Image (cartoon, rainbow, N blue to C red):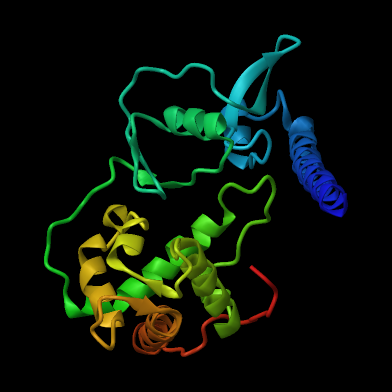
Length: 261
């Protein structure tokens, strides 16, 4: 009886969180749309669309629609998409025929799929240079920071990685380790690492070499300690060096806060 009651309470709590989070996203969305209303009819609606950040529905994007014979910017889930070829690359490394198709799939899966860049995703074949290998952990943490915000009903814009503290980077690395460690043995095997789909990432030609270098005892598995040292310590070492050598400053960010990601 207690087990049944606990299960019911858990379901009710989950439903409450889902409704509350979804309601907050919808409220923020309406506020954003209302803030643009004074400019409707005075400013090109396409330009207004560029200013409208879509939070609800999840995966939607801004399109110009007609309401009461007036063209207005509105966040919608596309039902159909034009056939024109204008490929874009998502942060997950998948190429879409155009941005509309990206958002159509994002809406269908009810998840945020960020746009990485215009044009198809490229898989460079060049050999990984020493400079690229040193930069790779910073780029990988950048990717993890994007992934940590995808799929949420509402999330404020994440701070850039340069503004994260050491504790926040460590938390980000540990969260991704937990997600990848499917059998919960506290180690990442090559099979676990394949789930990263890192072959679609920028500098992906450095991935295999990087993960091999993380395996300090050469047992073909990466522990949490090895993973954190590789990602966090080496990421910060590279960035401090980059900032001091290229930018004339060793500061990561003017203000670093210890807030959760």
